[in-house]
Length: 167
Image (cartoon, rainbow, N blue to C red; front, side, top):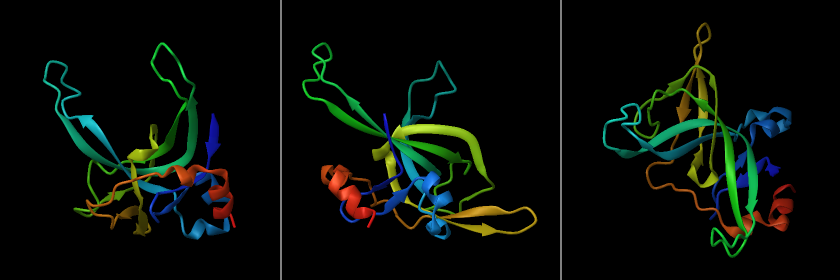
């Protein structure tokens, strides 16, 4: 699979840069690799006998990089045309389920847990501010609100668009 390190959310949205780029770039002071993403999760996942209860769950993490996966056409699966799927590889922040658009949300460090999600699950880039010095933690700044949802446009995936973004 191809590996990408940056993508722009459609309709004039944020430019998201993978953590790999942020560490080696002069732009590391303006880190655009921390993101908010939303998944539908079963609230009863730890209770095997309980009925499934799917709820929207907010997560925060650092986008490491993006995987570009092309699924070829296949008669058996009735996939008549090749399909492109983009996956985000994210190192998660332990925010204990808090939503920074609704309440103060903090994390102490990135976890050792990596999650691979459909890139469309990423809603926005978020900021972070270090609080304290002896036992520091990070406050998440998420001003997106409930109206922000990701919409990736096909034209943002073209080689020309990517090359223009590098200028």
